[in-house]
Image (cartoon, rainbow, N blue to C red; front, side, top):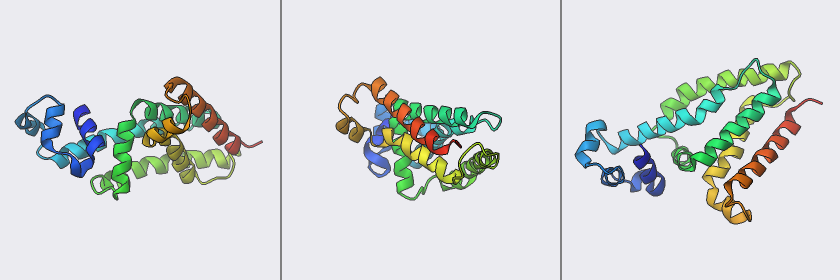
Length: 189
């Protein structure tokens, strides 16, 4: 899967071949076909694995927790994923930009169910007066956009922020900024 991620994130789905994946995995093409019947099957398995990992932080949003603590921790977890696995984020973003032809069933199934569930949690916090009145869906989308920007546009971030090649400094600044912006906008005074 690491080899497939490397190949697909470099060449895209259309530009990638089973030969490239097998070579990157240091295995024969026939060995690869033992596990997967086609390039599409490898790609969908990789996207499914990626999506599962990227959604794990959302599953950890605790309805019993303090909203500020929960949202802050969610931002931390999402930003850490962008830092540790930018190729997976770019792979997923590319699939979405192409209309999600290979994973629409996951998006309209598992993803929608999870997002609906967590939006109810956020709405409960809003109804309890713990958060400002915002759309829970758009809040989640904004967190995704803000945190995944550091993965999807890593080259741009590195070019525009002097010293951002020091990943610790860059991500600590990003984390502090995102938390301040989101929490200052969300917490009821």
